[in-house]
Image (cartoon, rainbow, N blue to C red; front, side, top):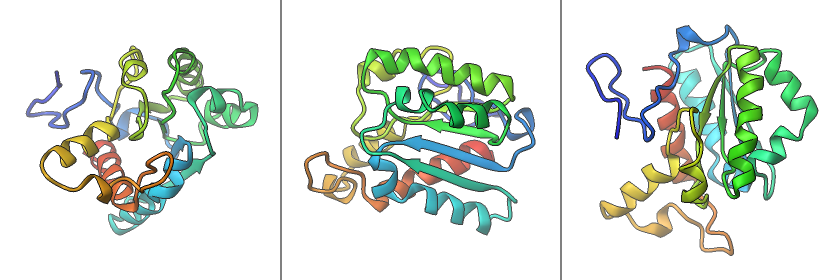
Length: 187
């Protein structure tokens, strides 16, 4: 399903709208949290460039930690405090691998709510569909789904996934993800 309409044309996977820029706090920094897929895809650099070229006055901070999950980030006391204090206008959260990650997303939601920070679930290409489906009342911008849809339309899998043990995302996948975030935030 999607919430496609004339007033908000951006389709979302779970029918919960990403808060518009005017509805979140006044910070100008978008935070992307994930594992090594964030680093290999270069999504943060692409988004930062798009934001600069669009004269948005916004920036992106992308944190890539090997094998990180949602729970990795909610266990980081300092990071959770900076989110709760309103250092970021949006948090795009990757790392949905186990049931515990869907539960941990509730902790991230509480920190974001404390500072009126927009929280968006943003699964990378190797994340678990059954866990993604458990995210509940958090908007979902499906980076994984977008890449799969492009692959299904005939673009080669190897253009989006590195031939390594984890099939890490390529910079092309990062470009696609950055474009998704840019359009969702600045629609």
